[in-house]
Image (cartoon, rainbow, N blue to C red; front, side):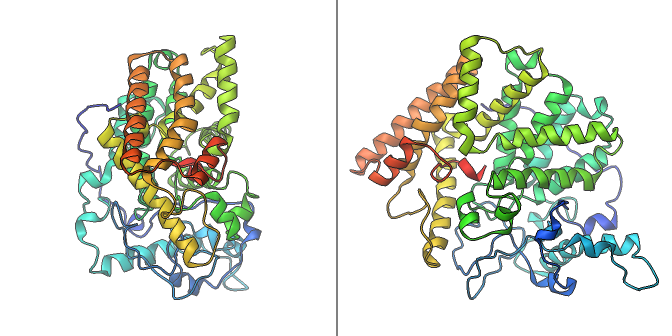
Length: 465
């Protein structure tokens, strides 16, 4: 599953503009801004974080910390809005209001309002002694390359496929876009962070190299596949969709309780594309079409629709009617490839697979602790008292991963697909053996939920995208 190459050193061609130093993350525009209130802009400096609770638990700070984590003294099930998405707490109608009855708002004023939160976020972080300089992004003070994996990998793959030249992309805009993407992943999430996005992007590259895809995909297909992989969990809050719904989160209302996280990831990615101007040189119709196809790919990662996609895939394979010359068929194969990339960790060597399993379980259990602390019903698989890493992963491999990768191997019968199935069998046996040693096994609640996979009880990314 691993691809080996020498990642190039990517110096900036010019000094970083001052406005970049004060802007962190995306601006995702929403036509449904009326759903949100219009708070006093002076209050924005008091609003931070993605989902912030009264918690002293530091285990969630797993990968790295991009700033301090604010905690509350009392719970309000309306989570705080994240600084990198001002549209979550600013009614865009005020952007076109007049500061002075006689004078329209200047473009500078609008720009400052949009970037106000991010400016405060970065300024506080730079003043905070708890954040050592080496963990800051290299567009600001020189972050170590190892901490910049998503940016470096994705930039390299764009160069590898010649996408920069083919689509006449501005390298400065591309790098800025990728930096903002990496910034908008929550480093405090044990699993759904920029490292997971980089891992999925690397896996997607492996699938794009498979013979049936490498000889058929267009440059646009490859561009969209890599973009979807890099942004498929953008701004993930570290909790699942049922949690957002039962706590009346604004995103659940915005997307009407349907593919809430996936819709948010997509819209966040579109916001970044527009803010960076990466495709601004393309005809408007082409840009909108690419945004739509990007959404179709990201929405396919909704695990609650797993059976829908798997049934369609099986039907195509049984009829042997997948035609890679057909653009809609190629797009469907890309959807399946992204789904495989998103949940392929059980198909890795044991030591690597085990680490990812522990990270996603840690995130589940952290959600469960929040739910217990605030007297909410604990979501399936999130109770550390009744679930183990082994029991969760055994059910996940049996009912979700194995069926998907068995069909993928039918479609692309290569050494890679056969190796993945081999590792999957070994890892499944490894977790089963660990359960037997502990005298455990799947508890009744986990076993029941695994028999009928749905949107409320699936691990390893599952409905967390």
